[in-house]
Image 1 (spheres, one colour):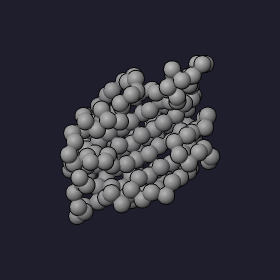
Image 2: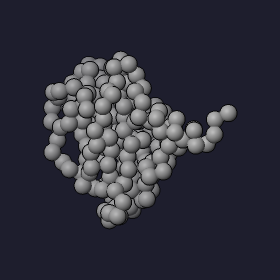
Image 3: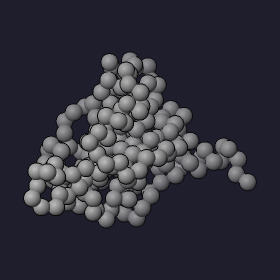
Image 4: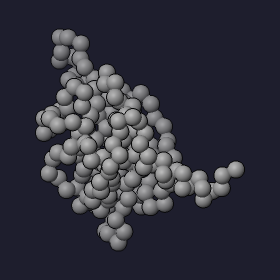
Length: 193
């Protein structure tokens, strides 16, 4: 029988393990100006110049705004605006407004003492354009959003990919590993109001 200490070590190793064939093996560290840090795969590509959030894509290209091309995913990690005055449920409601929620689960993160103890995973879909504005079938984006709270800070990891992308599960594994790596910088000011 495995003891509690061995379970913690195994869980820690699994949180950094490669979850799928072809997944990245090398991760690097990002420190936000909002006093959190996260690790991300080096074979994903950073875009944007903001220092308060991490924005990466699975491949080069795509528009600088919010557009991803086919067979591409985007992950953003950010502290929810005004999170000190909102509950985690209020943050989740804000991020999922206007989407069709497909599933909602709580993911344990027992290996983390300084990070997210539990992560709320919400998978939803939304049309690229309002269905009423289109004369043809409207494509959908799948959002996998991972919400966690650490010392009053609500940190959100948002994965976006096209509905029919065969690599969605791989992307979701990367996003979950990233969410599990989130830490707060100690000795920093509390959340912004």
